[in-house]
Image 1: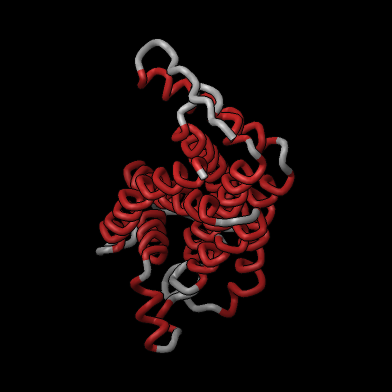
Image 2: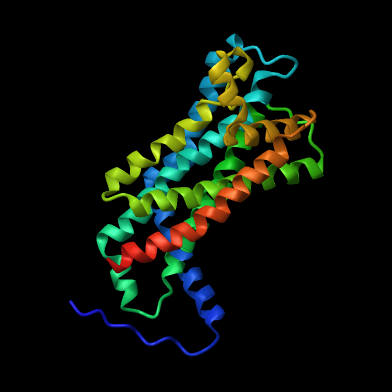
Length: 266
């Protein structure tokens, strides 16, 4: 089969790259709005988790001087972010499987715009999900002590975390051979927050598991955001979270581009 290389559009390259990305971001956002499954990932599952931990397990878990709902909300938000990552993996893999990428290759569309469209749409999904989780948290007793600067820092950390997770999910969608495989490959992302400080204090865990739970990157995000929300000392958690997740972005973004070009050309 002969591949026809479309002529490059006239005008500045950066302008057309942004224009392509804008169009594909809009496409991905429309898919989200029309997909009951993605809406369920955004709202239903995280809300159910919050209510379950708040009312079923909260009375049995000791968190020291902070109420359990104030403790667990930051962790449930990290779980919501990783839950939403499965939709990104599936969407990227679906585009590669169903031929839409081949169609784009016959048009003057930058290949990078496909990934940017999925990642930015995922970030919109994450922002909405985080806002909903915080709103539901207030309804069930969440009472933050954060000032304006602390809110900005907490939301900035969550956005950095969500960006990194979205790019990881895009890579998993590229390497997966089937849509079902993409969903399966993203499952470890979903469960990483559980093996950490997201839902329970690591002090209750066996020594080896405790060491992992206290030092894995999702725990740093949960710990920093929790401290910022409650006005507690942040310690090393914030800068460790930034180093971890900014470093992951630096590695994963070019990796995603390289793998996508190779997969699309194949």
